[in-house]
Image 1 (cartoon, helix red, strand yellow):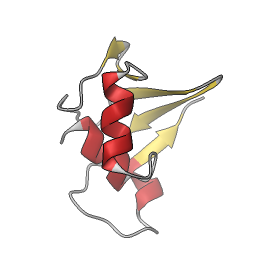
Image 2 (cartoon, helix red, strand yellow):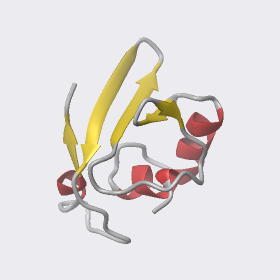
Image 3 (cartoon, rainbow, N blue to C red):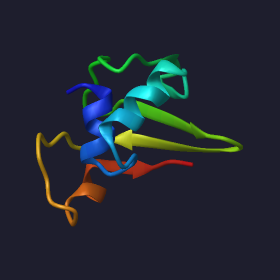
Image 4 (cartoon, rainbow, N blue to C red):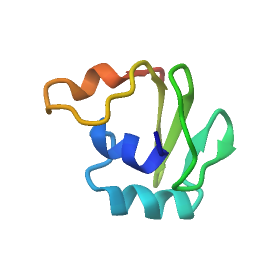
Length: 80
């Protein structure tokens, strides 16, 4: 699954366009490397999202093409 779509489906970022812009500005890292919006991710990958002064690190636990709001937190595990 593409990183921008995963961020939207998992509700880590609200909209896919915002996720795409964050990738283009190199604010999203997958396994320590800057991610483009089309970067493919798989279970076990580590995603780091930088928001201004703070950042969130999460590990992908499950990939779902579509999910309900209640299921979104099961797609990742917050590390930091």
